[in-house]
Length: 451
Image (cartoon, rainbow, N blue to C red; front, side, top):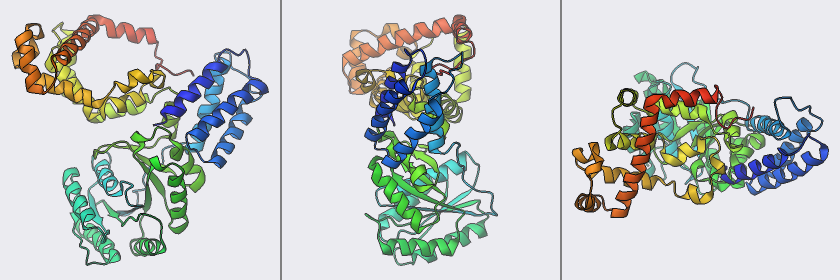
């Protein structure tokens, strides 16, 4: 997300680093490029204008601190303006009401609404430790009801059964009553989507809202539709008292215009980003962290949180002990690390959060494919336990057998062994105190942060 915008903004900041001080002239030239970058990212024109005016007011005439170059000072100004534009802070779900807390989910057909209900249920169960009941009031699509039933089972939520012969209002009311009787903490109601906004759809969802009085009314919208996403959110906000927005398919949106426009246009906060198809691919939206990503400074905090939630801590501890004792890092360890990376959303998700990732050449980024990671895992799985522990024994006939077993080419086996050899050397250096030396060299600073 924001790949194109991030690259453009970093180029602008790079030009300013050579300036001795900030003037109206060099700030004006930079802001013209920023304006074009935002428009190309499909940010709404009124939002662009307000943003540029805000940055200009903050930057022109500003004293550059002794520790900052003009380029760094402008980065700080743009960072602060981006944070303000997107909402200043993470807007959490309001679950402080007497249980069950009712969440109503609305959106157009195809926006990923039903999958988002399951993702939200998983998030609440695993992160908030809440019991969750889900129900579908989409009586027009039997497949949607069945989809939610299956997804509820995978995320550990209770499913409230419904059918196409019932009234949506009765389904929603019945689900809330069932959640109350069962002592559930949260009930999430999935509503019918349409291919476009129509009066019948709005009347139906208003009736459901009036019947259950939800504490949260969330609008799910496909971020890849750009300005259409913002306009649709505005229309729903005029019909319903929305409390927040969930942007789906953010991992496939290279522009990011919807994320930068929604808050300003609707006045409603973005609460979550959908960043993949899996049920764990839902991230709370932090404006400050997103601003950091846009400016190429990464999102180390989210990366650390993600690691804490998904990485097998016991497995990591054993590997650290093994390396510290001078034992060899083998292909089974390498496979474990690849699988941990998969659990964290894959290499694309990790790269998005690493400082300076946007400056990596496009040719190199295109090679960072999660499918390649899965092929590496398949190759290692086709090896015998002895081959994984002692890769030096892998020669011609063994390579051909592994190649046939994993459906890959012998050249890929060779590349894997070369990559593994380099990683093995790195692990050996870390085991001899290399990590401590690296941390001392950083002097407590996070990489990529200019202020």
